[in-house]
Each structure stands twice: as C-alpha cells, then as structure tokens.
Length: 205
Length: 431
Image (cartoon, rainbow over all chains, first blue to last red; front, side):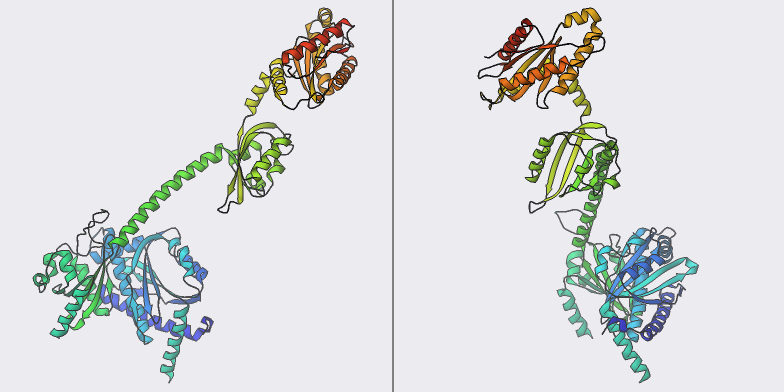
C-alpha cells in the first residue's frame, strides 16, 4: 500500500480523532495539574524531511533557546512525540508545579518532563484507544537547544514520508505555552490508514 | 491475591534493577533484592513504612503528583533522566573514575494495582551511559578549544604566509590572503587557474624542469624562483612545493609556500657587482673561474678560454678629459662587451681599465676569433667627447693542470704582447 493512498478522508478522520485526543489532554491537565488551558485545532500534513524542517522553522524561532522534550512511542503505530517550550514558559511551568518563585533547573526540567508525559500519554493513548490498538511509551529526554537544532542532520535519514500532527497548547493565566509535534514514519502512516479504514467500516457497518 | 503478590516479589527479586511498590501515600509495599543490596535497607525493615522516613529529601509533592497521574491515566510517567534527577540517592562504588559518586537513575512509575492505588517504580542504573555522555561532552569542549586555536592559527597563517594549494593538475584551489595581497590578485579570480599561467616568463627553465621532475616523482622541491607580480614587478621567492599523497600513494594536491627574498637577492647582487659598470666584480669572477676549473669534462678540444681586455691609452683619456669621461668610456665598454658576448660567457671588471671574459666550450681558435669580434665592436664605439677608442686583448685557454693564476698569467702575457705590437690587437699565449 502506498503512502499516497492516505486520502483527504483519512486525514479528516484523523483530524477528528486528534480533536478528541486533544480535548482529553486538556481535561487531564486540568484534573492533574489544576491548570486550565486551551489546545489549538491540530494541523495535519504528510510531507518529507524538508517539509518537516520548513514547518518547524515556520513555528519555532531558529535562534531562541527552547526546552525540547522528545518521547518515542511504539506498537502497531509508532513515532516520536515532541514538546517544545520557550525558556520563559518552562520557567513559569516550574514555578507553577513546584510552587517556588525561582524554580531550579532541576525543577524546570522535571516539570517539563511531567507535562510532556501527561500530554503524550493522553493524546496518543486516546488516539490509539479510538483506533483499537495500544502503544508503549519510552522514557522521554529533554534538551535545552536552539530552534534550529530540533531536527538534527543525522535524523534526516530516519524518516522518508512523515505525518506531522502539530498544535499549540496554552495556559494563558500562567503564561505557559508550548508546541506539540507528533511525527510518524512510512510504516505507521500505512498502518494508520488501515486502522482508520477499519474504524470507518465499524462506524458505517 | 497474597499468593500472586508473593509470586510478584519473587520476580522482582530476580530483576537486575531496582523495583519498589508504593501507594499514593508513599507507603512501601514491595522492596526488591537489588534495592536491599544497593541501599543497605532490607525489605523487612522498610515494607509497611513510609518512604519519607528513609528519604526525607525527596520532593514528595511532585512524587505524589506523578503517582496520581500514573494511576489516573493508567500509563507510565517518568522522572527526568538527566544529571538533575532528584529521586532517591544510591551510592556508586566505581573506583576507576569519580565522575559520578551516586547512581544516575532512570525512574519509571507504572500502574501496579490501581484499585489499591499502588504503583510500581522501576529504577535503572544508567550511570555508565551518563559517564560516556559526560566524557563525550568533555571531549567536545576540548575539540572546540582546539578548533578555536586552529582557527586562530589559520588566521595568522592566512595573513602572513604566502601559500597556494593546487589540485593534482596544478589548478589553483586556494590561496592565502598574504599571497593574494603580495602578488596583487584576488583569491576568487585565482581559483581554477593554472599556477604556471600566473607566473609567466620563468627564466630558469632548467630549475623548472628539475622541479617538475621531482614533483612527478612525488618528492618535495625547494629552491629560489624569479617571479613577477600582477603589475609586472620582478621578485625573488624562496619556494617549497610539496605533493600531498593519498593512502594509495597517488598525488591528490600540491602546496606551495613562498617566502619573499627579493631584498636578500638585491644585497647578494650588490656584493658581486661592480658599482660603475654593473658587471660582475673581481670577487664574483674568481668564484665563477674556480667553478669552471673544477669541472671534470674539459678536454684538449673542448676547453674554455680566458680573455683579458685593456683599454688603450686610458690614462691619456683621463688626463685629457677628466675622470668622469674616463668612467663613461668604461661604462660604454661594459655595455658594448655585454652585447657582444654569448649568453654563456662571463664578463667581469677586473680592475681599473681591465676587463676579463670567461668563454666555456671553446678552443684557442674560437677564443681568438671571439676576442677579435669584441675588439672590432669596441673599435666601432663612439664615446661622446672622446670619439673612438680601442682595446688590446690577451687570450689563454685551459690546459690540464692549469690554475686561475697560470691562466691569468698567460692571458696577461698575451695582453702585454698586444700592447707591444701596437695595441688594438689580439694576442694569445699557449701553455
């Protein structure tokens, strides 16, 4: 099955499922962290590595420092969850979660990991639940890097066709915001299409 | 249920990582063998007690929030695995390095018995991985420092040393700023051009061929070169040209390093030049004559000649017209002889109104013939105020066993004879 066969219908279904997953994430964060935020409508694209770079460059400032957390997930569908926060947002998150005016680097790092955990598990878990499958999450890692280093040169060989789900999350009252990118490669795109087909059959049977 | 939990504890004990079970209040329900060994706390002691009693420094607000998240989302949560990891402290006994004195932990909190609000915490020792990361970071810092030094060195070299790099076909691939500045070119305009195309009019063909030969043999060549700047100015360079070979011993490129020795060459030239006539002086003539005598291949038919030339009635010219006119006669003589001799001949001012000429590869007949040609050339000169003048010539050719002194002596006798026989003549003396 060719990746190109991922039709606009498939994208529409996936977009709808992602909307549900995002809503789930917002509710979980409100419940677990007592933070009430909003998630923007996710943007879905199938592109290549250059397209990914272009989209990241369009969203993220190349020279600014960011807390970038990457977490892999695997299973029938697998990929990479990336959560990007500015220095300022990360510090505000550390301040909020640890209830200290000047959070330490360790506070900030741990707070970023914690929020990423919640975001990835709620979004991906809900999506996979809707598609009747399961995923395994791997330990995330956070780096403080400039925007132009989010995608390394060595990573360009890892993906051929990439599906990008991107959105922005905001807790305006706490001045916390971040960008979410969910990336998956060729095999997952194919399997995702198959799972969406099954879901459609289920719905219209 | 109890049996199942016991069974789980047996499994936990066999694991090569730390595994503990706690509830939302941080009460410990399981503590495996790995933890017993590495923390020194036995399970019988800690089970049923609160973790806070043993690890009061742990941030329990964050920890309990993670437990709650794990249970609520039914999915694992993780501690930050970086150096700032703040889970329990476990000492590390590595002796060979002291980079990490406590274990670097990767901590995962997974749902265990959600109904009892219990989670399982797995602790993996990733200290070796972190040590490697720290070592790598340290090396990266060192490399960055070295790169900085190299960059500074490159800037110094670029600004001060004249270097040209070419490919194996001698097409320029790069030049230093110092080279471009000295020769009056722009780097961009030189790249892709042949090195020989910018250094036209190389007068030292023999040296050029020798250089080419050595380089083709993949050897380094060094020597002096007479080159021209873009504006035509002549300069002397001390050059070293080295081929760069690849692992299969094939030439990949050449590097030429030039050093300006024009001033040194000028001083050298001054030390061997007669200031009035600009011909070689006696010292240089002695040196060249000595080299000529040392050549082994002279035979009776292939030898070299020595001619002494003396201006006739020069004292009278000086007395009549003054020394300035006398000097003008000597300068005109030098110019006339320079034009008349072969390129291989060596002409020098011996002193006063006397000149000497060395003629390689001649026999006596050819030497006399050459001397007479020079005599006629002088006879046809016209010196302002003085008019025509003449000169007398004494000729000698090398014979086996000759020294400079014996040859000079015979040529001098020939000159004396020419003077005696009426001047404006060529006379020779055989050995």
